[in-house]
Length: 411
Image 1 (cartoon, rainbow, N blue to C red):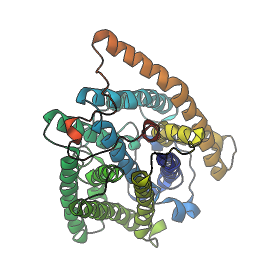
Image 2: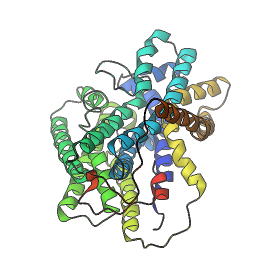
Image 3: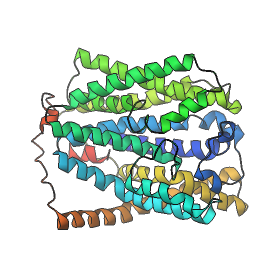
Image 4: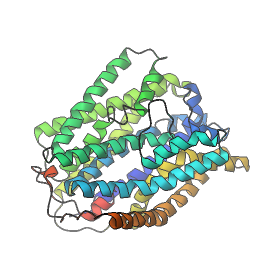
Protein backbone atom coordinates (compact mmCIF):
# COMPACT_ATOMS: atom_id res chain seq x y z
CA UNK A 1 0.00 0.00 0.00
CA UNK A 2 1.33 3.41 -0.86
CA UNK A 3 2.50 5.71 1.88
CA UNK A 4 0.38 8.86 1.55
CA UNK A 5 -0.24 9.81 5.19
CA UNK A 6 3.24 11.21 5.95
CA UNK A 7 1.98 14.37 4.23
CA UNK A 8 0.19 15.00 7.50
CA UNK A 9 3.45 15.34 9.44
CA UNK A 10 4.38 18.65 7.80
CA UNK A 11 0.71 19.66 8.09
CA UNK A 12 0.78 19.10 11.84
CA UNK A 13 4.06 20.98 12.17
CA UNK A 14 2.77 23.90 10.08
CA UNK A 15 -0.39 24.18 12.20
CA UNK A 16 1.70 24.08 15.39
CA UNK A 17 3.80 26.94 14.07
CA UNK A 18 0.61 28.79 13.19
CA UNK A 19 -0.66 28.45 16.76
CA UNK A 20 2.73 29.54 18.13
CA UNK A 21 2.90 32.63 15.94
CA UNK A 22 -0.71 33.46 16.87
CA UNK A 23 0.11 33.41 20.59
CA UNK A 24 3.43 35.19 20.31
CA UNK A 25 2.70 37.87 17.71
CA UNK A 26 -1.01 38.47 18.22
CA UNK A 27 -2.55 37.17 21.44
CA UNK A 28 0.47 38.32 23.49
CA UNK A 29 -0.79 41.90 23.19
CA UNK A 30 -4.34 41.63 21.79
CA UNK A 31 -5.65 39.90 24.93
CA UNK A 32 -5.76 43.31 26.63
CA UNK A 33 -8.84 44.11 24.53
CA UNK A 34 -10.62 41.10 26.05
CA UNK A 35 -9.16 41.13 29.55
CA UNK A 36 -8.48 37.42 29.98
CA UNK A 37 -4.84 37.16 31.14
CA UNK A 38 -2.97 33.95 31.85
CA UNK A 39 0.30 33.07 33.54
CA UNK A 40 2.14 33.54 30.25
CA UNK A 41 1.49 37.30 30.41
CA UNK A 42 3.84 37.53 33.41
CA UNK A 43 6.85 36.39 31.36
CA UNK A 44 6.13 38.27 28.12
CA UNK A 45 8.26 41.11 26.78
CA UNK A 46 6.62 44.52 26.46
CA UNK A 47 6.35 44.38 22.65
CA UNK A 48 3.44 44.39 20.20
CA UNK A 49 3.12 43.40 16.55
CA UNK A 50 0.04 45.24 15.20
CA UNK A 51 1.25 45.13 11.59
CA UNK A 52 1.26 41.32 11.74
CA UNK A 53 -2.31 41.08 13.02
CA UNK A 54 -3.98 40.40 9.60
CA UNK A 55 -1.66 37.42 9.04
CA UNK A 56 -1.52 35.92 12.54
CA UNK A 57 -4.91 36.39 14.21
CA UNK A 58 -6.40 33.17 12.80
CA UNK A 59 -3.49 30.85 13.77
CA UNK A 60 -5.62 29.36 16.55
CA UNK A 61 -7.52 27.33 13.95
CA UNK A 62 -4.58 24.93 13.98
CA UNK A 63 -6.11 23.44 17.14
CA UNK A 64 -9.22 22.44 15.19
CA UNK A 65 -6.94 20.75 12.65
CA UNK A 66 -5.18 18.89 15.48
CA UNK A 67 -8.51 17.57 16.73
CA UNK A 68 -9.42 16.17 13.30
CA UNK A 69 -6.04 14.43 13.03
CA UNK A 70 -6.47 13.11 16.57
CA UNK A 71 -9.84 11.60 15.66
CA UNK A 72 -8.19 9.83 12.73
CA UNK A 73 -5.26 8.52 14.77
CA UNK A 74 -7.33 7.36 17.73
CA UNK A 75 -9.83 5.61 15.43
CA UNK A 76 -6.98 3.62 13.91
CA UNK A 77 -5.43 2.80 17.28
CA UNK A 78 -8.71 1.73 18.87
CA UNK A 79 -9.79 -0.34 15.88
CA UNK A 80 -6.92 -2.78 16.36
CA UNK A 81 -6.31 -2.66 20.13
CA UNK A 82 -7.80 -4.12 23.25
CA UNK A 83 -9.17 -1.54 25.71
CA UNK A 84 -6.21 -1.97 28.06
CA UNK A 85 -3.67 -1.80 25.25
CA UNK A 86 -5.34 1.32 23.89
CA UNK A 87 -5.31 3.07 27.27
CA UNK A 88 -1.67 2.18 27.92
CA UNK A 89 -0.67 3.38 24.47
CA UNK A 90 -2.33 6.76 25.03
CA UNK A 91 -0.68 7.14 28.45
CA UNK A 92 2.74 6.33 27.03
CA UNK A 93 2.16 8.86 24.27
CA UNK A 94 0.86 11.79 26.35
CA UNK A 95 2.50 11.71 29.75
CA UNK A 96 6.27 11.79 28.96
CA UNK A 97 6.08 15.05 26.99
CA UNK A 98 3.62 16.61 29.44
CA UNK A 99 5.84 15.83 32.42
CA UNK A 100 8.87 17.40 30.74
CA UNK A 101 7.10 20.40 29.24
CA UNK A 102 4.94 21.20 32.29
CA UNK A 103 8.01 21.09 34.52
CA UNK A 104 9.89 23.41 32.15
CA UNK A 105 6.88 25.75 32.14
CA UNK A 106 6.75 25.76 35.94
CA UNK A 107 10.46 26.61 36.20
CA UNK A 108 10.10 29.47 33.70
CA UNK A 109 7.10 30.88 35.57
CA UNK A 110 8.95 30.72 38.89
CA UNK A 111 12.12 32.32 37.47
CA UNK A 112 10.58 34.94 35.17
CA UNK A 113 6.99 35.36 36.33
CA UNK A 114 5.76 38.11 38.59
CA UNK A 115 3.31 35.98 40.58
CA UNK A 116 3.86 33.92 43.72
CA UNK A 117 5.30 30.44 43.21
CA UNK A 118 2.45 29.00 45.28
CA UNK A 119 -0.03 30.11 42.59
CA UNK A 120 1.47 27.60 40.16
CA UNK A 121 1.34 24.48 42.36
CA UNK A 122 -2.27 23.38 41.79
CA UNK A 123 -2.22 24.18 38.03
CA UNK A 124 1.05 22.24 37.79
CA UNK A 125 -0.52 19.17 39.43
CA UNK A 126 -3.48 19.39 37.03
CA UNK A 127 -1.08 19.56 34.09
CA UNK A 128 1.10 16.67 35.27
CA UNK A 129 -1.88 14.39 35.87
CA UNK A 130 -3.91 15.56 32.84
CA UNK A 131 -6.90 16.17 35.08
CA UNK A 132 -9.09 19.06 33.80
CA UNK A 133 -9.31 22.06 36.10
CA UNK A 134 -12.50 23.50 37.49
CA UNK A 135 -14.53 26.29 35.94
CA UNK A 136 -12.86 29.09 37.90
CA UNK A 137 -9.30 27.70 38.17
CA UNK A 138 -6.41 28.72 35.92
CA UNK A 139 -4.35 26.60 33.56
CA UNK A 140 -0.60 26.36 34.08
CA UNK A 141 -0.46 27.36 30.43
CA UNK A 142 -3.48 28.38 28.39
CA UNK A 143 -2.71 25.80 25.68
CA UNK A 144 -3.40 22.94 28.11
CA UNK A 145 -7.16 23.35 27.67
CA UNK A 146 -6.85 21.24 24.51
CA UNK A 147 -5.55 18.30 26.54
CA UNK A 148 -8.82 18.32 28.49
CA UNK A 149 -10.64 17.71 25.21
CA UNK A 150 -8.12 15.09 24.08
CA UNK A 151 -8.30 13.14 27.34
CA UNK A 152 -12.10 13.32 27.30
CA UNK A 153 -12.12 11.86 23.80
CA UNK A 154 -9.72 9.07 24.80
CA UNK A 155 -11.90 8.28 27.80
CA UNK A 156 -15.01 8.16 25.64
CA UNK A 157 -13.34 5.77 23.20
CA UNK A 158 -12.08 3.59 26.04
CA UNK A 159 -15.54 3.35 27.62
CA UNK A 160 -17.08 2.54 24.24
CA UNK A 161 -14.53 -0.25 23.76
CA UNK A 162 -15.37 -1.70 27.18
CA UNK A 163 -19.06 -2.06 26.29
CA UNK A 164 -18.25 -4.45 23.41
CA UNK A 165 -21.47 -3.19 21.83
CA UNK A 166 -20.66 0.38 20.76
CA UNK A 167 -18.70 0.36 17.51
CA UNK A 168 -16.44 2.99 15.99
CA UNK A 169 -19.24 3.88 13.60
CA UNK A 170 -21.72 4.29 16.48
CA UNK A 171 -19.28 6.58 18.26
CA UNK A 172 -18.80 8.73 15.16
CA UNK A 173 -22.57 9.12 14.68
CA UNK A 174 -23.06 9.94 18.35
CA UNK A 175 -20.36 12.62 18.43
CA UNK A 176 -21.61 14.04 15.15
CA UNK A 177 -25.16 14.59 16.44
CA UNK A 178 -24.13 15.56 19.99
CA UNK A 179 -21.70 18.29 18.95
CA UNK A 180 -23.79 19.51 16.02
CA UNK A 181 -26.75 20.20 18.31
CA UNK A 182 -24.58 22.17 20.72
CA UNK A 183 -22.92 24.23 17.97
CA UNK A 184 -26.29 24.97 16.39
CA UNK A 185 -27.51 26.27 19.75
CA UNK A 186 -24.27 28.26 20.13
CA UNK A 187 -24.88 29.95 16.78
CA UNK A 188 -28.44 30.75 17.83
CA UNK A 189 -27.16 32.28 21.07
CA UNK A 190 -24.53 34.21 19.11
CA UNK A 191 -27.24 35.77 16.93
CA UNK A 192 -28.97 37.05 20.08
CA UNK A 193 -25.85 38.10 22.00
CA UNK A 194 -24.58 41.62 22.50
CA UNK A 195 -20.87 42.24 21.85
CA UNK A 196 -20.26 42.85 25.57
CA UNK A 197 -21.49 39.35 26.48
CA UNK A 198 -19.66 37.50 23.70
CA UNK A 199 -16.22 37.23 25.42
CA UNK A 200 -17.77 35.54 28.45
CA UNK A 201 -19.61 32.98 26.32
CA UNK A 202 -16.53 32.16 24.26
CA UNK A 203 -14.30 31.72 27.30
CA UNK A 204 -16.65 28.95 28.43
CA UNK A 205 -15.45 26.98 25.41
CA UNK A 206 -12.08 26.62 27.12
CA UNK A 207 -13.41 25.61 30.52
CA UNK A 208 -15.43 22.79 31.98
CA UNK A 209 -17.88 21.66 30.70
CA UNK A 210 -17.34 22.58 27.02
CA UNK A 211 -13.78 21.28 26.63
CA UNK A 212 -14.00 18.30 28.98
CA UNK A 213 -17.38 17.18 27.61
CA UNK A 214 -16.58 17.78 23.92
CA UNK A 215 -19.61 20.00 23.54
CA UNK A 216 -18.19 22.36 20.93
CA UNK A 217 -15.25 20.29 19.68
CA UNK A 218 -16.69 16.80 19.41
CA UNK A 219 -17.48 17.37 15.74
CA UNK A 220 -13.77 17.61 14.90
CA UNK A 221 -12.97 14.25 16.47
CA UNK A 222 -16.02 12.76 14.73
CA UNK A 223 -14.78 14.08 11.39
CA UNK A 224 -11.40 12.45 12.01
CA UNK A 225 -13.13 9.11 12.63
CA UNK A 226 -15.13 9.42 9.42
CA UNK A 227 -11.96 10.23 7.47
CA UNK A 228 -10.29 7.15 8.93
CA UNK A 229 -13.21 4.99 7.83
CA UNK A 230 -13.10 6.58 4.38
CA UNK A 231 -9.41 5.66 4.13
CA UNK A 232 -10.44 2.01 4.31
CA UNK A 233 -13.73 1.79 2.44
CA UNK A 234 -16.31 3.82 0.56
CA UNK A 235 -18.66 5.70 2.86
CA UNK A 236 -22.39 5.01 2.68
CA UNK A 237 -24.86 7.74 1.80
CA UNK A 238 -25.83 8.18 5.45
CA UNK A 239 -22.17 8.42 6.45
CA UNK A 240 -21.57 11.09 3.82
CA UNK A 241 -24.42 13.08 5.32
CA UNK A 242 -22.75 12.70 8.72
CA UNK A 243 -19.48 14.01 7.26
CA UNK A 244 -21.31 17.03 5.85
CA UNK A 245 -22.88 17.66 9.27
CA UNK A 246 -19.49 17.52 11.01
CA UNK A 247 -17.99 19.93 8.48
CA UNK A 248 -20.85 22.40 8.90
CA UNK A 249 -20.72 22.01 12.69
CA UNK A 250 -16.96 22.56 12.72
CA UNK A 251 -17.30 25.63 10.53
CA UNK A 252 -19.95 26.95 12.96
CA UNK A 253 -17.60 26.53 15.94
CA UNK A 254 -14.81 28.32 14.08
CA UNK A 255 -17.18 31.09 13.03
CA UNK A 256 -18.32 31.51 16.64
CA UNK A 257 -14.75 31.92 17.89
CA UNK A 258 -13.70 34.13 14.96
CA UNK A 259 -16.65 36.42 15.66
CA UNK A 260 -15.38 36.78 19.21
CA UNK A 261 -12.03 38.05 17.96
CA UNK A 262 -13.42 40.34 15.28
CA UNK A 263 -15.96 41.86 17.67
CA UNK A 264 -13.64 42.30 20.63
CA UNK A 265 -10.31 43.33 19.08
CA UNK A 266 -10.25 46.57 17.11
CA UNK A 267 -6.98 45.75 15.31
CA UNK A 268 -8.70 43.06 13.22
CA UNK A 269 -12.21 44.47 12.99
CA UNK A 270 -11.88 44.64 9.18
CA UNK A 271 -10.98 40.95 8.81
CA UNK A 272 -13.38 38.19 7.77
CA UNK A 273 -14.52 35.21 9.83
CA UNK A 274 -14.33 33.17 6.63
CA UNK A 275 -10.50 33.24 6.68
CA UNK A 276 -10.00 30.69 9.50
CA UNK A 277 -12.84 28.58 8.10
CA UNK A 278 -11.12 28.42 4.71
CA UNK A 279 -7.76 27.55 6.31
CA UNK A 280 -9.40 24.74 8.28
CA UNK A 281 -11.26 23.44 5.21
CA UNK A 282 -8.01 23.39 3.24
CA UNK A 283 -6.37 21.25 5.94
CA UNK A 284 -9.38 18.91 6.12
CA UNK A 285 -9.31 18.68 2.33
CA UNK A 286 -5.68 17.55 2.46
CA UNK A 287 -6.50 14.86 5.04
CA UNK A 288 -9.49 13.70 2.96
CA UNK A 289 -7.34 13.58 -0.16
CA UNK A 290 -4.76 11.43 1.64
CA UNK A 291 -7.54 9.14 2.90
CA UNK A 292 -8.97 8.76 -0.60
CA UNK A 293 -5.58 7.94 -2.08
CA UNK A 294 -5.02 5.34 0.62
CA UNK A 295 -8.35 3.68 -0.19
CA UNK A 296 -7.56 3.52 -3.88
CA UNK A 297 -3.94 2.48 -3.41
CA UNK A 298 -2.80 -0.85 -4.75
CA UNK A 299 -0.74 -3.40 -2.89
CA UNK A 300 2.45 -1.96 -4.37
CA UNK A 301 4.75 0.00 -2.12
CA UNK A 302 6.04 3.47 -2.81
CA UNK A 303 9.16 5.30 -1.79
CA UNK A 304 9.21 6.12 1.90
CA UNK A 305 8.73 9.71 2.95
CA UNK A 306 11.86 11.54 4.12
CA UNK A 307 12.76 10.82 7.73
CA UNK A 308 12.74 14.51 8.57
CA UNK A 309 8.99 14.63 7.85
CA UNK A 310 8.45 12.10 10.60
CA UNK A 311 10.73 14.14 12.87
CA UNK A 312 8.59 17.22 12.27
CA UNK A 313 5.55 15.25 13.38
CA UNK A 314 7.25 14.15 16.60
CA UNK A 315 8.38 17.70 17.39
CA UNK A 316 4.82 19.04 17.07
CA UNK A 317 3.54 17.87 20.48
CA UNK A 318 6.30 19.31 22.72
CA UNK A 319 6.41 22.43 20.54
CA UNK A 320 2.73 23.01 21.17
CA UNK A 321 3.17 22.52 24.93
CA UNK A 322 6.17 24.86 25.29
CA UNK A 323 5.72 27.72 22.84
CA UNK A 324 3.29 29.81 24.89
CA UNK A 325 5.23 30.21 28.16
CA UNK A 326 8.74 28.93 27.50
CA UNK A 327 8.83 30.44 24.02
CA UNK A 328 7.47 33.77 25.26
CA UNK A 329 10.15 33.87 27.97
CA UNK A 330 12.86 33.25 25.36
CA UNK A 331 11.51 36.17 23.33
CA UNK A 332 11.69 38.35 26.43
CA UNK A 333 15.34 37.40 27.03
CA UNK A 334 16.23 38.09 23.40
CA UNK A 335 14.43 41.45 23.35
CA UNK A 336 16.05 42.48 26.65
CA UNK A 337 19.40 41.60 25.07
CA UNK A 338 18.71 44.11 22.28
CA UNK A 339 17.40 41.89 19.47
CA UNK A 340 14.67 43.26 17.20
CA UNK A 341 11.25 42.12 18.42
CA UNK A 342 10.25 40.45 15.15
CA UNK A 343 13.61 38.76 14.72
CA UNK A 344 13.34 37.53 18.32
CA UNK A 345 10.19 35.58 17.42
CA UNK A 346 11.89 33.67 14.61
CA UNK A 347 15.11 33.06 16.53
CA UNK A 348 13.07 31.81 19.47
CA UNK A 349 11.09 29.43 17.23
CA UNK A 350 14.32 28.03 15.83
CA UNK A 351 15.72 27.48 19.32
CA UNK A 352 12.45 25.96 20.51
CA UNK A 353 12.35 23.51 17.59
CA UNK A 354 15.84 22.31 18.54
CA UNK A 355 14.84 21.96 22.19
CA UNK A 356 11.69 20.05 21.25
CA UNK A 357 13.67 17.77 18.96
CA UNK A 358 15.87 16.88 21.93
CA UNK A 359 12.78 16.25 24.06
CA UNK A 360 11.07 13.95 21.55
CA UNK A 361 14.23 12.17 20.41
CA UNK A 362 16.07 11.72 23.70
CA UNK A 363 14.01 12.47 26.80
CA UNK A 364 10.57 11.11 25.88
CA UNK A 365 11.87 7.64 24.84
CA UNK A 366 13.77 7.34 28.14
CA UNK A 367 10.69 8.22 30.20
CA UNK A 368 8.50 5.94 28.11
CA UNK A 369 10.91 3.07 28.61
CA UNK A 370 10.95 3.66 32.37
CA UNK A 371 7.13 3.76 32.45
CA UNK A 372 6.91 0.48 30.52
CA UNK A 373 9.36 -1.22 32.86
CA UNK A 374 7.49 0.07 35.91
CA UNK A 375 4.16 -1.20 34.57
CA UNK A 376 5.73 -4.56 33.73
CA UNK A 377 7.17 -4.77 37.24
CA UNK A 378 3.95 -4.00 39.09
CA UNK A 379 1.56 -5.71 36.68
CA UNK A 380 1.21 -7.57 33.42
CA UNK A 381 1.47 -5.63 30.19
CA UNK A 382 -1.50 -6.12 27.84
CA UNK A 383 -0.91 -8.46 24.94
CA UNK A 384 -0.68 -6.80 21.55
CA UNK A 385 -3.37 -7.98 19.18
CA UNK A 386 -2.22 -9.43 15.83
CA UNK A 387 -2.48 -6.90 13.00
CA UNK A 388 -5.00 -9.15 11.25
CA UNK A 389 -7.34 -9.32 14.25
CA UNK A 390 -9.73 -6.46 14.86
CA UNK A 391 -11.72 -6.08 18.12
CA UNK A 392 -15.49 -5.73 18.34
CA UNK A 393 -15.11 -1.96 18.33
CA UNK A 394 -14.44 -2.05 14.58
CA UNK A 395 -16.85 -4.82 13.61
CA UNK A 396 -19.03 -4.29 10.58
CA UNK A 397 -16.69 -1.75 9.00
CA UNK A 398 -14.68 -4.04 6.77
CA UNK A 399 -11.59 -2.04 7.59
CA UNK A 400 -8.26 -2.85 6.04
CA UNK A 401 -5.29 -2.44 8.40
CA UNK A 402 -3.56 0.88 7.80
CA UNK A 403 0.16 0.09 7.39
CA UNK A 404 2.21 0.65 10.54
CA UNK A 405 4.48 3.14 8.77
CA UNK A 406 1.47 5.22 7.78
CA UNK A 407 0.03 5.20 11.29
CA UNK A 408 3.40 6.03 12.83
CA UNK A 409 3.45 9.27 10.84
CA UNK A 410 0.32 10.43 12.65
CA UNK A 411 1.14 9.43 16.23
